[in-house]
Image (cartoon, rainbow, N blue to C red; front, side, top):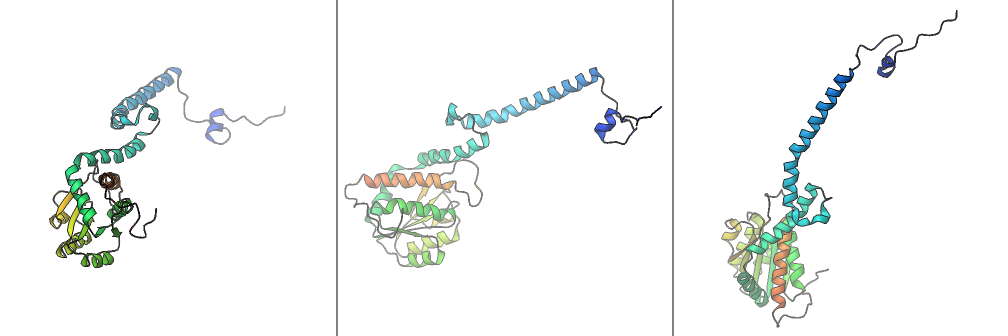
Length: 253
């Protein structure tokens, strides 16, 4: 009689084992399999319930996004919420009478210098580009040595603006101190009411970056700085004697 090779057991085939070796793993009984599935389902349900508070909290924090944005992930929605909260918080801090006073000084100044370091330098550029087209002779630089030289050239008819998020930038503090020693009126823009930069400035404009303290390089200050720039611009445009929107320097759009 012709003999055929012994067939490999199914579990041996699935486990990759050799011929004739039966897997030691015993199959689940039907009741045991049902109990295992039931435990897994209860575990998944518990994880879903445990995750609800976190998701609900994120949704409440971003509910202003509207019902059409329910598909937005909570972490993305939170990033979108931060700039809007910052603008709202900055608007609450702004004193319109102080803005009017700053506007008057800007109009009377024969020369305006704005300076900041890092992201604050970008904020200074933002303010410069907004006001230069409204006839304000404003200039800004992000180079420390140039800023020091410019500060030495200021006088009583000048206006110096220093921007520092934490208010502790040594370069910005030195810039305002030099400008003040030369007779220029100095303005500090920061988020801290009591800091090194506020001690050397004639007046202080406080901004807000709603939320936790940002990491180095964070652009969280820029939305509130844009709000401040627009507030000053609107106040400037309210004066009839503002010159035509012709830039006083080589600023580009």
